Amino acid sequence: MSADDPFGFSSPTEQGASARRDPSGTGFDGPVTSAELPVARTPAGLLYIAIAVGVIAIAIAVVFGTQPAMAIIAWALAGPVGIGLYAFFRLRDTSARARPFYAATTAGVVASWAALIVLVAGVLLAALRIAQWIGHL
Image (cartoon, rainbow, N blue to C red):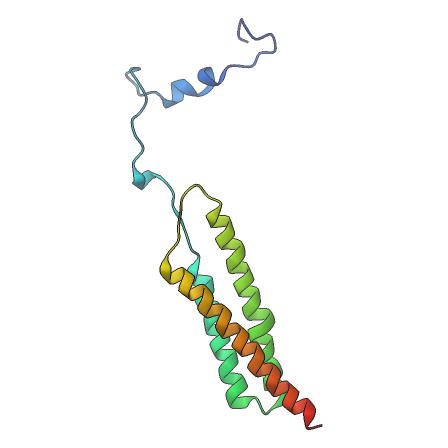
């Protein structure tokens, strides 16, 4: 309990100053190098998986789309699965951007747009195949 504080709280300088000073007691440890600062990056791995799922969905819709079950599988891959991966990427990317240091890459921006375009194309192609099947009933 400090003499000037009736509630027993120590001042911020008493709490952390001794831990931050160098052993000689003459000053602080020195400047922080850039190697010590954590830099957040774009979680591009999720984008690459989403692009792969979208490409697989497009391939299924184009090659096997005349079969109703395959068209529905292609739609499910590009829709809920692929767009779900893209949404999870956005969640992780927003979390990374909220950190003090964030390094956006050009490849991440390009992959983000590519994933969105491929997934939308997959959903549309599969939906057209499903619509063609329903139209022939």
